[in-house]
Image (cartoon, rainbow, N blue to C red; front, side, top):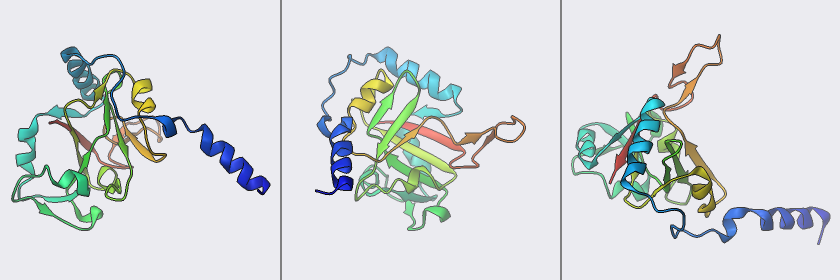
Length: 177
């Protein structure tokens, strides 16, 4: 084994998510956790909506990851180019109450461009995917590449002026399923 292979083998064995499980084992998430998640996300400029929000996607141009497409109502016009879509739709692996964050892992049917390219991002949060802390959510990761979304895209690089949507979607709606 070369030195390079030995180093990469040690690094690979140190990743915490290799032994992670998708079974929720953290503190139980109570109804109040949804209120905290909503408050935190709202404070960041995002919003939380119910499944009825998906009806607003009808007649709009949508780019959706394959695993999220099953949740879209009939009549949604899906496009193949994420840069031409009005709205990107993703399925969330975990939502975090304490920070209002969303963790979205990659995969063959999950390219994550839907969370990064269109001006509006709809993140679908299935029931049972809300955890109390970021530490718990990170402990459940099963892949190395994950997008951590904490509110709409924003920057204050130039003279401390907050601007939304420069590096990604300017609006974020977490849809509670």
